[in-house]
Image 1 (cartoon, rainbow, N blue to C red):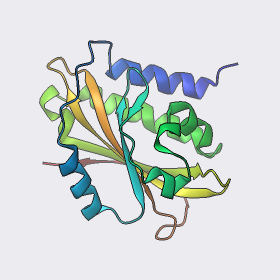
Image 2: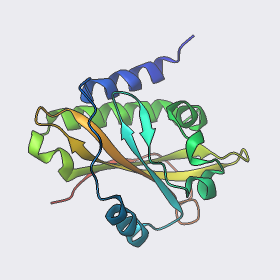
Image 3: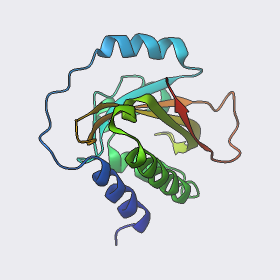
Length: 173
């Protein structure tokens, strides 16, 4: 039986990423890597996410240091199955809120906001780390279809013990 929380999350992602032809992604990934190294407060990894296809691309090698898996092992199923069970319903609510927020934005503002929230994530060893997830749309088309989000997971366990989940939106302009 499918998990209704996951069904809702996937439906929301498909809604903002409507099916369109997926063009080859043209991003300056080296610039993003340099920026991430400067601004992260803990060990982190990143990936590009296609919401319609529910596909992670270009996962950084640091995922191995943070959660103990190879980059090719991280996919949506792995992510969803390793979020702390108590945090998954809130994760689903946050994702629905993020989708509604993005749908309400003018097209020219889609890449001007990042969302961030935290949750517990199980590592390959079986323990949990406190993850800060930050996401920003880096590629959208002229109709407002979100083609790719850059998602950054930072282990904040040492600087912020898990207390409660919190969602925020940050304007980048």
